[in-house]
Length: 619
Image 1 (spheres, rainbow, N blue to C red):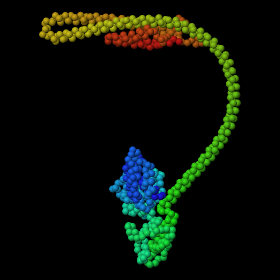
Image 2: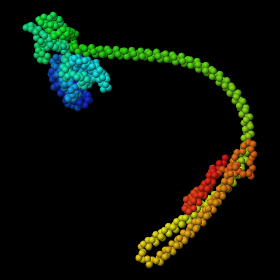
Image 3: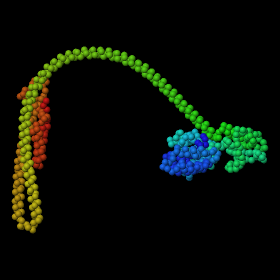
Image 4: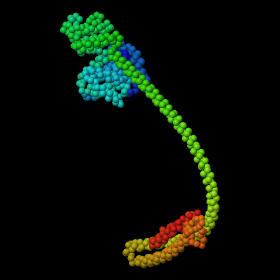
């Protein structure tokens, strides 16, 4: 990963922070400010003419990341000289832009990291993230970084917490963003129960090791070149040099040893009261140093040899090299996994193909057996069908002969039966004529009854009118009595005349009632005639039923002069009979209250007679 790629990662965060609407575009005025600040922190000459020319105010609108890249590459990144600027300043500029928008935390919480630690973790994330946008860090790199931090805190890394975190639905398995990573660190799952100062020291140590390319730091005793006395110094080892300071704050640098392929490290025996000694030899000088113990001496000699090896191989950073190796290992693992899956799929396909062919073979064998059995069954079935068909034909021939003989006998019986039916029909026609005559008589009686009912209804209406006139006269009489108390003597004759009129009306009412009584008697007489007609109908019905009984073979024909067994009224009744019944029901509603019980009894008797007559069905 070259310097341009490292700078682009940080600048990408700054560009996206300015994209407030998340549309992939940033206003030109904001890009001007961003470009000017980048030129300042990268220590490159600022070209205001090119800046104004490229971002002049026109109608083109905001600029996308693709539209900003040509200017960024040509006027900024192409002019960057490695070593002429401090990369941490560039990171701080981009962090300041992006943190305001994306890094919102609860400052009162005890688990929230300090701002400086969050910035260092952001830089570590950018260093270890994949070279794809948007930037994400794969789970292996997250585990590697967390192990480094836990090792610096001298605590054991808990893989279960990380696995639980990546098993959540909201976390993508392909990688996490820096904001998700910082949220996980602020949740306290990794730094649970650890003081903030220890966490900050661990984050700083890992930051200096990975981002600052510090292979090892610590105190060593160094022997002076002129005075030859021993002094304790703070040493910082990088792939290109070994620097030493007065104290660990690294403010007063006392010297810088450049490492190259001509340098070497040797272990020295103890002398001058110093132990665990070793020396670093260059072309011009030899530096003698003493560690606190054998383990520290071994770590320092190994780290210096690693720095020399990196310089010989032309590599500027140990962790960049380790990151590339880890990425290659992941790619190899992925390739092996894909190859294994492909092999498993191929084996599965072969197994399925083999099983399918075996199943097809079994099916073919089974189909052959079934076909053979079906052929034998068809042959046997054809033989049985031939024999059954022959037997059935013989039986049918015998049955046909017997049926012909029986049909001839039946035809003779049918002819005799038809003759008897014709005679019976003739007798029924004669009986129907007689029945029609009886029905005509009944219809006439019904019509007479209807006429009497009409007369009775008229009398009742007249009686009602008289009653109304009588009531009105009574009301007028009462009114006159109330109004003419003072004129009683003068109107006495008039009252007598009214009384005479009232008596006359009462006499007329009595006459109307007498007329109604006579009409009621006439109605009773008509009902008596109707019952007589119903009796005649019953008689003819009995005669008709006797004639309708079928004559069986061998029975004697009944004589015409004898009594008939039964008689049924035809289904299609005479229209006159329906008219008579309808008029009877209308007259029944118009009868007076005095004869309601008598007429109800008569009507009930008539309904029973009709029910006994029933519907006449003539075949």
